[in-house]
Every structure is written in structure tokens, then in C-alpha cells.
Image (cartoon, rainbow, N blue to C red; front, side, top):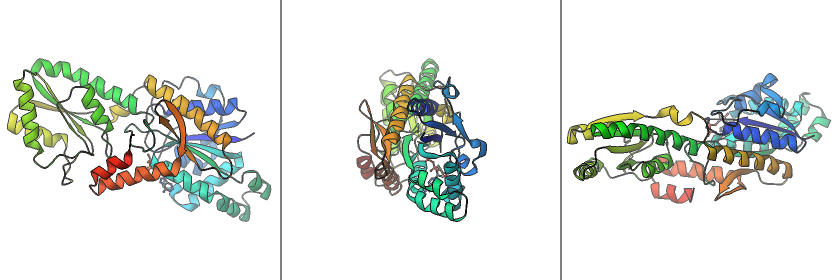
Length: 363
Ligand code: ADP
């Protein structure tokens, strides 16, 4: 009669529902009581109806839906011990000692801290009379497993995060749509795509759309990039190409760390080439829509594996995140991945781009 709860935290991504469904169904299949926690950590702190038992049917017909039906939120309360104490009380009252966190590195860091503090939180709850000594004993260890939902593919230790493939579908559909009109009118289209620290979306979109130029955070061009851009676009036009596509990642910058925006690129093209240049900012369209087949199956496999990992966890086992390694859903130490992800962000901030790429590794 183990209690297992699943929740989504931080930014949403397509495929989160498929992951929630898989966690819940695998938990029920294995004889656990499964719970949803609505609105991320805020729901855990507030308790009440936010923590709801789930049954087989409550996750029907959600595998194809984008976003997260159980809600996601940022939560300032959980950053304070007082908030985590309330959350611990709410979980113990329902006998929940297994958590699947679907979020980014911030959410996973919070979960790890919660797990480390768990026994001292329970001591405090016994002391203030919120829980009994018997409840403390029965719920003495908190097990956590992470799944990463992010369209940016910006988490270290996994080949793909849940949502990235669907976001690429949104981007490529938009580029295909725009290309046919651009071709007719000999236009240059500048597409801004997401990715603050990670250029994965921009690079892959660039390759599969035959873009002429891609600006991304990890490979900042020298400050004379306008000359190179102009030369490249001129070459393409004189070779008979009727349209040009330039992709700019949200976090693009030059080697001095100055941001390069879609507006900056347009200005150069307008002033120096007199092309008919237009900007399209895809924005939240990239997070929207239904998850792709790839994201659905990825989330199903990761969700099922997360529940299995929780069931096999012992008091001394290291918390894991479920990641994709080639074609396998595998367990990797959670804090190692979080720390590497944070080190990449730090290296990017300090303009140590080569270090960032090396730290990130294959994924
Ligand atoms: P993401 O999970 O997408 O990286 P955030 O960094 O915004 O998103 O984190 C989501 C939530 O996780 C925060 O609103 C907060 O409730 C919790 N959280 C993040 N970092 C910590 C931390 N160091 N300690 C406790 N809770 C945290």
C-alpha cells in the first residue's frame, strides 16, 4: 500500500500528460495508491484538494494532450523550510513517500533538498503534534525520481527531454509554411526560436529547413558577423536561391556577449541588402499543440521507468532521473545531472562557451 504522487513543476512541455499517465498506471498496476498533486509545489504546500487520489480512468484520454492537465506553477513557499514543512505534513497525512517530479533542474533541486530534509521535517512535525510517532516511523524515508520536461533539450544526462521533439515539429511546420510564401516573393525570413542557454532547437531546425544562417548561444560569432551574414546571403541569391532563412535562438549573442536579436539581423539585411526581410517570433507556439509520437512514447517509457525506480529504491539509494540513452530509458544520478546542467548555465553566463559545450557532452 505504498503511496506515490506525481506532479509537474516549472515550465510546461508537450508530453507531460503522457508521463503523468504512465506513472499513475504503472503505480496502480504495481498495487500502489497513486496521487496527483495539482499546481506543482504550491499544491503540495497548500494540500487539500490539490492532492487527489488518481485511478485508472482519471488518466484516460490525456496522452495526446499538450501542456499539463494537473497544472504547473512556480512556488516561492517551497523555497522556505516553513513551506516544505507544510508540504511534508500534507504528504504524511496521505501516506505518500514516493514522488515523481516532472520539471526542470530547479524543480529537481528542490525535490532533492526536500528528500535530504525529510527526517528533520518529520521530527519537527512530531514535536509540534501534527503527526504521530507511528506516522513518522511508517513514512520515515522519502523517495524521489525526476523526469525532465523541457522543450529546449537543455538538461545534461539525457539525449532528449520530454517536449523537444514536439517543439521541433511546431518550428518546422512554421518554417515550411513560411517558405512557400517567401519563395514566391523572394523574401528573407528571420525566425526566432526558443533556447536561452541551449541552441539545440535552432541547430536542428536550421539543418532540416536548409537555413542559410543560424545564430545560437553556444557558438557566438565574432562582432563582424554582419559582414559574414551579408556575404552568405548574397552568395545564395546570386546562385539563384529565391528565399533565405535565418534562424535566431532566443539566447544568441556575439563573442563579446552582446545579444543578437531577430531585430538586429533584420536591420543588417534591410540596410545592407535591401531584401524584403520579415521576422517571425514563434514564441509559445513552440510549447503548444499535441505531443509528437516520439514525445508520447518517450514519456510513456520514462514514466513507467520512474515508477519502477521508486518501487526498487532503498533507504540508501541515490535519487535518479530517468533519461534517454540512445534508445534506452535509463536511471542516472539526479544531482550529478542537475549540477552539470547548472555548470553549463554558469559557463555560458561567464562566456566560457567551449567549456559549456564540453560539459554538456553528447546531449
Ligand atoms: P524549472 O524546474 O523549470 O527549472 P524553476 O527553477 O522555476 O523551474 O523551479 C520550479 C520550482 O521549483 C520553484 O518555483 C520552486 O518552488 C522549486 N525550487 C527551485 N529551486 C529550488 C531550491 N533551490 N530549493 C527549493 N525549491 C526550489
